[in-house]
Length: 111
Length: 111
Image 1 (cartoon, each protein chain N blue to C red):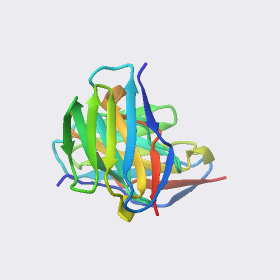
Image 2 (image 1 turned 60 degrees about the vertical axis):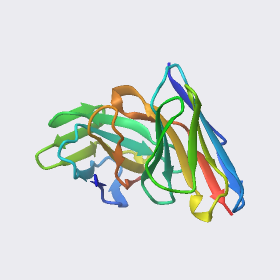
Image 3 (image 1 turned 180 degrees about the vertical axis):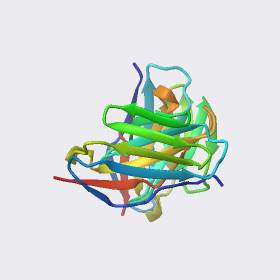
């Protein structure tokens, strides 16, 4: 069966510090992978998606970047965090019935 | 710009009542429609998908789609306090395209 893992679950980082969030998928090969962000009280905003190793599409210009070094690994990074980067970060892949299956998420607070 | 709109709520219903959640979308060529439930602090989970006009029932949940009116709804019968959550509507043009999520409707079921 397919599973998706995200870590860490929570993170508190100072402004200007770097960021690395990791997402891995098991039980499937070469899945499309997505990074979403949900700000407090807001909807889901698509940040990046990837259709394969080394292939990254950015949906929103921002302080973040993404990489896909391996088939089932998707990484979200930042060199210098801003206060506005705070939010709930979710990794997702196409799951049953063509809907998305989300990871458990990382709650990032930039202080 | 593809848009998905939902009333933000909160929608409050008494236990045992029918909760009705609504969603409208702007892209006429949308093909797939999804409802996600998101408990506070958790990631969204897929609860219903619908692709053709009419009703689709799954247990206490019924999804309704009207493509001519660009409208999709979710009915929850015999609402329970455990149904209290934010419900997200998501729309997709074709498989492989990126979803557009609505901002979500917060449902509160009062015991």
